[in-house]
Length: 213
Image 1 (cartoon, one colour):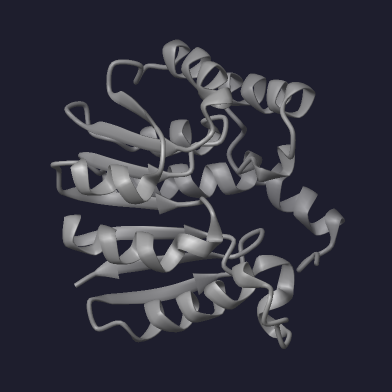
Image 2 (cartoon, helix red, strand yellow; image 1 turned 60 degrees about the vertical axis):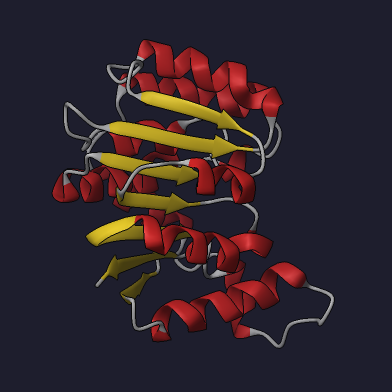
């Protein structure tokens, strides 16, 4: 489902900050060589993530779902000089393209790649986070959220991607459609959970901003 017209999407992108050269190269290579390139955050959403990170000025960032590392680099743009980025992905085949662009970035010494199951990795991370971006398997969004909240600093921000799920959240889901059913439960939970306050933004496929109280 397209929530706004392609013409309007192009206007929005053309009137937002230009995509940095390194990210443009990563964008191109992802579309040329990697399956499902639509999973890439892309120009406009990337600039939104960058702006939010610059407003938050996080020290420690956690990303669940690296893909090719585009959003990772966008989030690093607002990270403090003494900060760190932990990014987790289960697909080891993407590690080389991630590392290639991380090594070309100004944050190459601050980014820690974790390959494996985020449910197992998150409990081993001994940090408090100021900013978290969830963009992985939808079936585990509820689990990720409950693992993350205790690791957040007060006032920390949790960003959750794809929460509109191509408009499927407006339909009566098939009981066998686990992703849609979990996202419906997730959207309800983060809107009602007393530990956070949440606003849902209709950016691309839906992005929620949750502030930890």
